[in-house]
Amino acid sequence: MTFQNASLILSGAFLLSASAIAQTPDYRADALYLLDLIDAEYAYAHRFDGRNPARGAQGVDPDSVTDPSSLLRFAECAVNALQDHHAVLGVSSPRSYGLTPSFNDLWVEFRDDVYVVTDVRAGSPAQAVGVTPGWRIASVAGLPIEEAVEGLCGGPYDTGAGKGFAARVLAAGPRDQARDFVFLDADGQAQALSLPNLYQVETEDRPLISVTEHEGVRVLRFNDSLGNGDLIAAIDEALSGARPDGLIIDLRDTPSGGDTLYARALMGRLIDDAKAYQRHALPQIERDTGVARQWVEEVLPRGDSLAGVPVVVLAGRWTGSMGEGLTLGLDAVADAVTIAAPMAGLLGAIYDYDLPHSGWTVKLPTETLYHVDGTPREAYRADIGLESADVRGPNGEDLALERAFEALGMESR
Image (cartoon, rainbow, N blue to C red; front, side, top):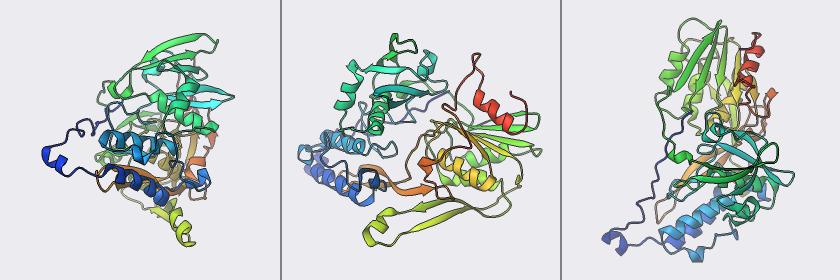
């Protein structure tokens, strides 16, 4: 497992030239613009009964914004208030919290009044030191977890879902420092651990798709590559040669999402005729005009068809955004069997918006997305549900992959 390093594009942005000082941007105006932007464009306001939760949230005070540093804090707090891992800023500093799920190896939820680790990313620093699902977080960065959640800007986090969101932000940690935790293990014993931040983990080269084959069944594991410009060629290479008896599409390591172009490139090889792939809607239009707008996106066949080859899809917590869309799309167009834990639940499709004075980019979920049967993408459940798609056997067996072979009528690998 490897993790990509993200560029911190604001790390030098606080240094203004003499000419820039003469024309200092109106940072407060950008703060007000961001609040209005969320009002106008955020597609999931129904989660907050139609209101903008950033207004009045902790750390979201336009009058406090006077410079780039205070604007960044304001914007990060406003985005946190949406409790939506798909709403992100295009700017950051070394102290900004890492993105979930791309740069987080712990999935944390608030259950029964405790903060419990419900999944651990395969091959990650957390897994390497023995953190397992079921462990509880007692403290993070030297603070009791409840105190840390209450202090995270963008709150209050007064629902179970909100507390889980805040805990995942804290678990990712500031990008420039190690993450210090006290966990309670399965026996209730305290385990004090310091984990490297995923932004600091050295990466290694991996193929865009790892391909293996066993008795005619071909396994394609996508290595967080759904936005890579060379992926179409890699897809065609992975599907070349003799027609397989079955395909296993492993999307358990696609947390960074990608582009629908590459999803359609894969699905197009598995069909003979145009098929509906997903539904889109712009709820803001209906909210503003009373007239709904919704449309269906199709995928078209391309290249040598593998239509009719049985397909199984593996997905889990580190299947994000386009990985989630591809899972639903393969269900719809290729009649795939899906085997998955709940996925990352990244909401909708994001649009980029620029703040007019600073020029900073804000990425907001603006479209709502659905399976063709009308199920919201974030509510989709697999044909075969798992608590953790990366669950391992006592000797490290990949039990989800074994289930995939079984679904194709083969013995467990």
